[in-house]
Image 1 (tube, rainbow, N blue to C red):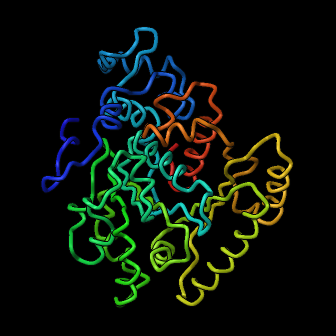
Image 2: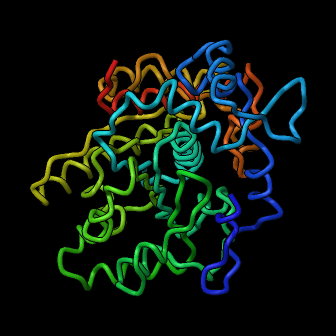
Length: 345
C-alpha cells in the first residue's frame, strides 16, 4: 500500500494525515464483507478467510476483526464479484441542478465498486472538486485535471492519482473551468472526453464521472461518452420540474447529434419518510418516470452520508449494520451492477 503514498513531480499527493492513514489502518469487518458480497453469510466469509490464510489488521479489535482493503477486495471478488462482466462501463452521475447529492452517490458507488474487486477510474468533472476532496485529494491547483488531459498538456498516466488498490481518480479544481473555452475551440468538441479516455478503457472495468451542475460543453461530452446516466434527483417538488427540463434537453441534444440516448436511470435521493413532500414527489416520479427507476427504492436522507463525505471513508468502513445509508447504498450498488453487467450465474 505504501506505493499509493507517493508524490507526483514533487507535489504532495494526498492529505495523508486525514484520509490515507484511515485507508491504511482501517478495513472491513466480516459482516461488511458479507453484505457487499450480495448478503453472503458470515460463515462463508469466515471459511474463505481461514482457507486462504488471510489475517486481520493488527490494530483491529479482537471482538470486531477488520481486514485490509486488498484482502477485502480479494475475498469479495472471489466469493461474489468474479461472475460479473461489465458491459456498460462508462457512467455519469448527472443532473444540471445542484444539491441533488450526485457527488455523494458517485463517491459511494465508485469506492464500493473498487471494494468489490473491480478496476475503477472515477473522474471529477466539477470544478468545485468536492469528489476529489472526499477522496482525500487536496482541493488546490497543484494537481492535473481533465483540462490538462484533453488540452494535450498531460497524458492519462500523469493526470490519474491512485486512491487505493483498484481505485484511480482524475481530480478537479478551479482550473477545470478553463476547459469550456478550450472545448469550444476544438473540432468534435462534444467528443473530446471520449477521444481522450476511450483508448484506455481496457485498463478499467468501470469509468465513472461526477458531472458539474450546469448545461455545459463538458457535460455534453459526458452524455456523448456515457453508456449510462445515473440521474440523481431529490425527492422534492422543485426537483421534478428540473427533471422534465433535463429530459427535454437530453432529447434535443441527442437528436441534434444523431446519437442514441444513453441508458437512463433515475436515482431518487434524500428521501424523508416523515414528510409529505417526499411521498408526493415519489408518487409523481413513479407515475411519469417509473420505467427509469429501481422499483420501490429511494436513497433515504441520513447523517451517515455526510459523515462519509467529511471523513473520506466509504460507508462500509464505519457504518453500523443497521445503517439505512449503508443499506440503501448497497441496494443501489447491486442494482447498478446487475444493470451494467452480464452475469455467469
